[in-house]
Length: 255
Image 1: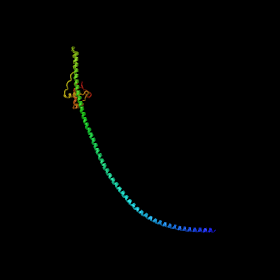
Image 2: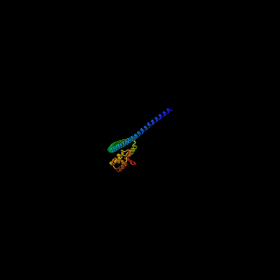
Image 3: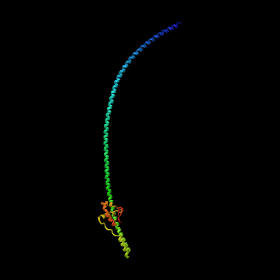
Image 4: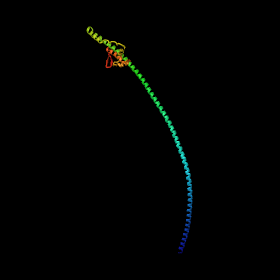
């Protein structure tokens, strides 16, 4: 029983010690808490002051940055305007040069076209002259050929007529009258044509003789360089003499 009491007393003593230690610890904790609170308050005040100072500094820095940014933007804007102005001037200069080049090209093209047209006209005139000269030469040669052919044909026809007359005389030689009758008839049929009365008739007869396919008085007058109405009377006289014939408006040589 004594052991129990002593043990209980010891426990109570231990508990008292523990209570003292606990109270001491609580007192230390309260002091620590008070010190922490005081320190935290001081630190908070210091941090708040530091933050305010930092904000002020940052505001100044931000102001400086904004000012620099505005200056930079303003400089960039001015530089862009100046660059745009220079670009516009260069573009205007380039457009002016381009317009001059286009104008020069147009002038050169027009000169080339006019030169080509003049050359074509000159060549056309030259070719026309050459063609006219060739045509005139061919016409002259054809007229010479037709004139030679007409003369040769007349000579051949005269020879054939003479041979025919000789043959008829030879066939009726000795009979007298038949030969004389046929010769007379042939002589009547072959009455020689009279010569043209004047120079104009001769010209009309010549140009009609050179036109076996027929020719109008208008064309004849153009070739003879004579007003065609002046050829009407000579043509009528030649028709009356049997030297030419007329069909519709064209005149033909009598073969």
